[in-house]
Image (cartoon, rainbow over all chains, first blue to last red):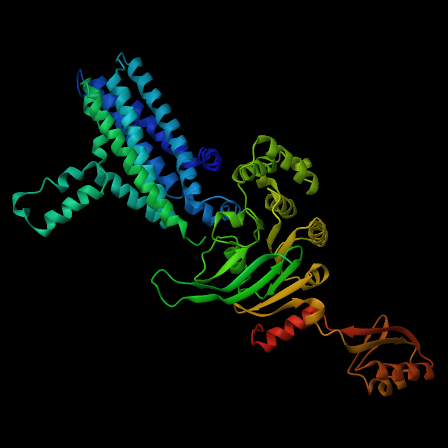
Length: 253
Length: 314
């Protein structure tokens, strides 16, 4: 109950954040502007609109998670609203988990709204919405689950600006983590190769959640793969949240 | 035997910088005891460690060494916090919530069900006169309104101990008076009240016991009448109608003299000297307006302690 009280309050708080509406505006511009690129690629316009719309949901969803999430706990400490909360008979981890769930509620709503807008736009242009498109939106939500957990972790240990830079860097690196293990032959059996392999396993592999090409081209994706990606995202986000709770446990506020 | 509402043993807090240098000792081996049902005033200059102590009791800070217990429970644990209500200095709330929503939120954190939270609203809005402003957003509140809400927030769940950090800070005289009355009302209802304050006259009026903190160390604690020297320190005599040429003669034995609209003021070292002065005033055709004894106040004692321990502000 305490976790849900914090989550509910966090949702009410984050939904008032002006950054959210600025980013949603640009997400809308990107989705509707994707038709312009479709004109360049003759006969490919629906595919382009689907691809760019899904990319916009991922990128702007991540930016919302980063900008709102990276200041989530920090702001409570900075504004001292935390004093009258964690001095109550509650565990500190309940506060961290509640903040996370509240923001995830917002992210779920934002993903749903952006997904519905993108889907409606595709239908308006004469395209069709299939299971793969919906699955792609669901996996983007799971990707944002991980990004938000990273942002919440950063908000417990560092300032919002530094936290946002770190999470954004990891978001970019997480989409390109394949290059860490796809090294040229002369790196074989070197320290560099070992370090890159370690980084590959530490950095969240966000490309696991990317089925945009399949969704744009209507290529089916196996449920086993989707299930595996969901489990990966859930476990990774859970671990990050565990670290965030541990970091916050002994923090002086 | 009285129950201990608060006990700290060798409680120490050192604030360390990010790079692990030696840090600053904010609280140095504090041994403190507050009994159930008493009003305890925690005094000290800015930076003496009062807020640090309060934050340690409320588990907002973790001690570097030593322990703090609330009704026998270690303050770092969740169970200790069920016994206390905390009012921070300059309390902050979510600006977009109303008092009704704010107290409902805190009620949920105390694990109260919907009926319990509704009861708490009824009880606290009555006690703190919040009903009229119950549906206003906190962002529209004045300092006094915020303070009332902060008191209500501290009382959610009806904790037996209230920890108040500078509850009079920034309030106008009427607000301070209301706060004093509320503290006494809560004491009469059986609450233990531990509060820090700069306003020594308020502390003197409502506290059973006080503790004085100087640079992180507790220099004294006890009942005010035990700490403060109640013997007469001096006597002030005010008189009118004294012939001007006699004022110099009367002033000869006085420690201090001044003239005001009330008349000539003579501060004498003791009652005997003051008696002699009064006889002379009558002999010179003057009229006695006031005869008052001056005893040590808590403020005098506080300043004496600051000087004794080298903590006086430069």
